[in-house]
Image (cartoon, rainbow, N blue to C red; front, side, top):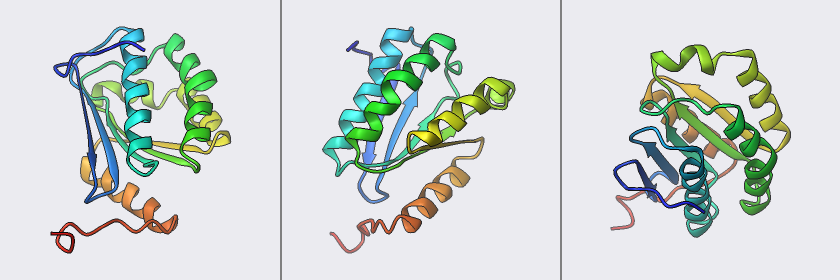
Length: 151
């Protein structure tokens, strides 16, 4: 697994929300990008197999064919097995990424993800993305600790 700089990627688990948040702060070469996904899986496993991820892609390009292939063929099946339930991912994408996010290739990628119990959606608004993740938690019967009651 590649290492990456915290100047390039930030990763945070929010126990008050039950959501894992990854933010790419700059473009990374494919090996380092794969390393960030592996770090997310490791963090998810350490935090009750967290299956609700917010991933901010706005400061990096959307993945190219090689990374999409790795994600589809290697990483997605690994995630499905490791987290013991479907993965819900809200991707934040900027206007400059809209064409790639709405492409036929991405549509195929998203359909394939659903066959692996992975449900990704693209958003341009973080509040809407968080709302969708909270809805998915409720539908899955996941109770998130209220930070006000745990203090």
